[in-house]
Amino acid sequence: MKHRLFGAACAAALVTAASAASAQPTPKFEYGKSEDVKDVEGTEWDATAEAGVVLTSGNSRITTLTGGFKATRKQAKNKFSAEAAGAFARTSNLVANDANGDMVLTSDEVRREDKDSAKNAAAKVRYDRFLTEKNSLFVAALAGTDPLAGKDLTAGGQLGYSRLLYLSDAHELAGEFGYDFSYEKFATDDPTATSSISIHSARAFTGYKGKLSETTTVEGSVELLANVNGQTINGRDVSAFEDLRVNLASSIAAKLSKSVALSFSFGAKYDKVPAPLAIAGFMLDPTDPPESSKMDTVTKASLIVTFL
Image (cartoon, rainbow, N blue to C red):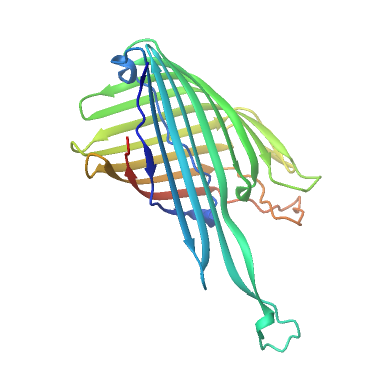
């Protein structure tokens, strides 16, 4: 059995997220192609991991943690892959508490208040079975959590058909069509609110990989999920094809040396019918409930070091 470990990639990462920094990390969209297993003899493993941390103290106090990993197993016409990513960010801000109302603060009327601005994770496992050089079938399972976006749990699965549409030495384009099931458990303590929904969707995906030079590569993908079943969320009826979800991902990577690479990536998640906003200690107005943001984005810069 052949094993290859492509190292722990230490990401000195700058991570910024729109929508109050609560964007759920989206595992990198991967599509299977027969080239992945064409030259595999026996069983081959690949694995990478990355982690980032930012800590500040003193007047400005911020803690940011990010991490992720990816692993693949290839054998004959079979490919198994697993990936996960997570992010956590907390800020400590000064808050005034003018106890006597004289508009003059003393040292004991100022305190620190901690707030989480990101707390999420997502994971995905996938199996590809290659039928021919350009055709394959796949099945996948997904799970995640993003309470700041109103979702304590998201879980589901996908299955479908994948087709390699174009392949050359510098470019490849693939498309996928199939079915997606999503279960969403909302982050709410309101006993009168909708606690969870199940979404059955038609799925379409296209992904591109290109080589700008011997040391620079680019990737991009878009995934569309269109619900085929109706739902009711806190008294609001959502019809079929109304709850559209779109996931975008793009990246560029440049190899600086044999063991060092620089990577920039951008991801966006759009949900036309987002989860109800979850604020501890409050119930939602059933006639006009606040919603989470429809769009979340993540931008990341990583310095990747391959040790083995």
